Length: 416
Image (cartoon, rainbow, N blue to C red; front, side):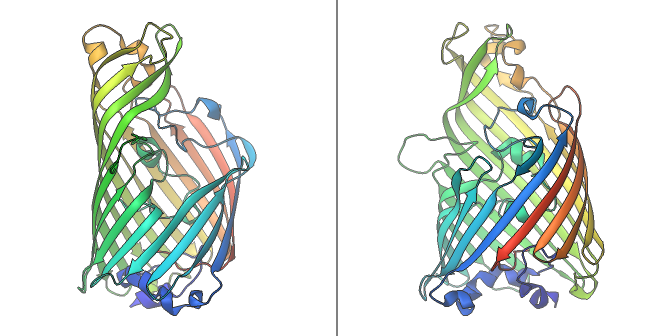
């Protein structure tokens, strides 16, 4: 089974093809050199050159409440991406720990992840606590340097403002069966979009996940899953302008519920992904929000005004990456969003018009992307990417990226 071969790859950039027995491999951390007193240390260097036909400062997802997160293509010309410094080790025979700091191009340091993990809590169960990337869907639990494209799918940016991190607890249970079956639950503060800081005791986000998968012969494997997340938002503000062009601050208070379906298929001859390999993946998002929309909370345009808000939005992406010869890969991705039909009480009762909330006018953003990358070794990769992005609803942003990703130090194999 190719699971074993790929699990020991230990390379962050290699196109590994692990099978599902690897998913539980975190339990084996205690048997690695990381059990020594000194923690394993790794550093990821990431940078891009970007040529964009539209001003990135005007980037938005037409029809969606702005997340205020990491959206859009970033800036023009040469720039640093986020550099990640990670320390990980076995704390004692019971716990493992990991800390990842991201240094932004603006010279700011952010805590990407900081968690402890208790494996073997009971048969097949693992408890994680602290700040961690949520395990919903397929891509969210992976760090950006492992993505097959320079940027995240549009659905991740529109629905979560980028990768969703959770400050809280996660419990995973791996079923003792031949077929991979994993159930998980998360609870946390939910301070980031689509949630907000509610200044209340208790949790702001709940999430449930279920995944299953298996091998198909010696060369193929698959995984699919379903995730459910519920956030609580209180005075989640966003900037807009009214029909006269006056800048206004609006806010949403209510509940946000998101469903995510994910699927991935991988192929490599006899499980050996060093020569040729193929990966097909896709995710579908559906979010329902209901509550109250406050217009002009700072009284710049006759506000504040309040009434109901309800909407159901969706989005999906599909991508395929083919390694056609050692170290060379080519990929194709298509994204599409549907802003839905928002029911806005202030518009329905005639107090406002749709032009007073231009960000929420219905649209169906989409993007097409192709990429080619080359990895001289498993520790370095350069990538060329082209995209036609029609997220703004008023034309196409033609984007060209040239990206490098370099890995220094110890770095464990990635999950499936």
